[in-house]
Image (cartoon, rainbow, N blue to C red; front, side, top):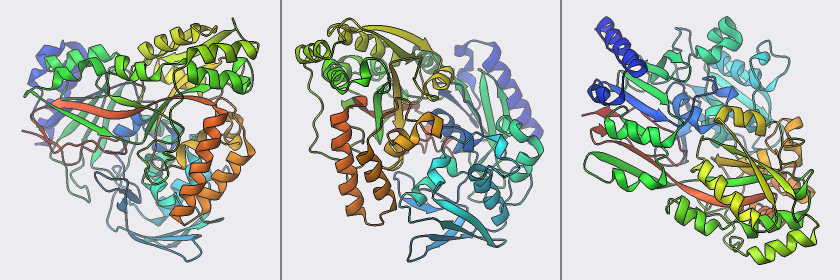
Length: 520
């Protein structure tokens, strides 16, 4: 039976690479083909940041905890239970017994310690398999202790409210120490986790194939394999979907949403914690001036972008925190109104009328919302207030390689999108002065405000949600005024599948959970 399936998988792989989409209408029922927006950077969850990659990884790995389906609430996974000390500085996890990694090695407390020490200690022998850009998520962990083979404890420097949520995020997925020791940096191309699917193959710019884990602790999935195809061009993804080349696609272009409202397809839409924004270079150039940053927020017709470019699939953003975090969202803030006359006067008063602005735009990536048409429209809006915008367009991973190290000396602004799991995540990683790129963060525009730093530090150590909410709302007011970003849109995520794909739903985490999915 196994050999027969491998023949089917091989045949399908050849078809994906060699023949045209219409022939793929005969995709085997036990195989799901997913159209992704970009090539993954790596399959090592500790080293990546993009939801595009996470959508694959979440099916290959488990964390100690996971998000309960349909929510951002945490439930047990590789840990069956846990206890938090009254001080909030000791987290003790009781681990699931009998779980094996895909390479045959055993999951236990030593494996958990290996994972977190690898990320957090530069003295760990496999720390050089990084870098680990989201290790910030676990920076409060002072020590990981093995209590016994199936009990592990995190000792924190101080209370850290988002820890459980961050452990459910893909950065907290547990990799096989045995495979990391064997492969080193090559682990990202030949990964091993404990998840519902095992890694089978990766052909660059063509496909990543994962196959069913028959021994999965939470029950083997119905599908025998999933093939993730990177299809960067959104029109090509749509064509493949319509002609049968793929079973499912993520991030349906706004112009094509109505196309899939037929009995032949299932269209999925859901609001989530997403922000599409423009990073502004606060360190040099025109946007070093706060008045020019505010002017950019007034100059860009965000309502027109949402209605005309995004076809109503998003809402205009009012600040750095998505409204999906209702308890922490400052609903007193309203989006910057479209006022090009006011914006033009502000730019002229600041002495930057006629200045040239370099703008990084991507061809497509995680939650990027028609980035090229959006970039072109933004260019036109800024031209109306006297800023000459020069667009430079890059493939997604190349784009990240230019933006994440910082805009200094390279660009004045860049598109960006984040899907987050907690109101702490985005501002802590991208707005603190301690998160400048040379300090290991994603504050690529070098924004700095000591009060914002203070509020974020206080919010993450508070165990009272009302206190956290007050601190986050105050932070939003300051960031709104300082305008280190242009706050553009909050996306209502979407996906489409063929009608015979069953038991699939979108998640507020923006991940693709395929463990229960099958084809009728």
